[in-house]
Length: 129
Image (cartoon, rainbow, N blue to C red; front, side):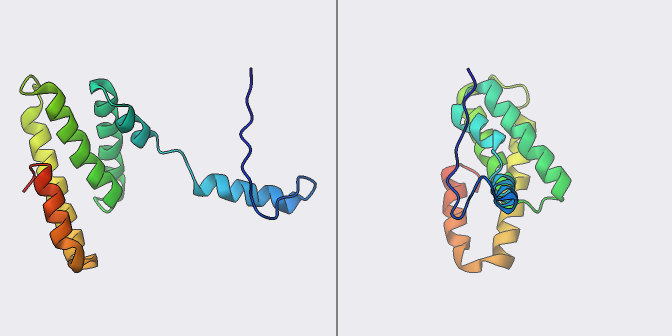
């Protein structure tokens, strides 16, 4: 059975071709965050897949995507909690966490210095600083 998702957009009229372009713009503005879904669902395989996605975003953006940097920190922390020393890639994950945390601190110093203490307390709760 096929289900149709209806999104209520102000000013939408199905007979107006301009309204279709408005709906298309809304759909492009709200893409699904596959990596967030994987992280939220949890489980080792999903967390590893989300971590790979975040790592590829960081690679493509040259480390300029704050959401991906936070995602790496969260995923590696969650993977560490699930594996508790059984993970062969633990050293690599810790290094990746550290690099992401350093990049986040650098960004926050430049963009939002007033929020730097909040970032540091967040990273400390993830055992990253």
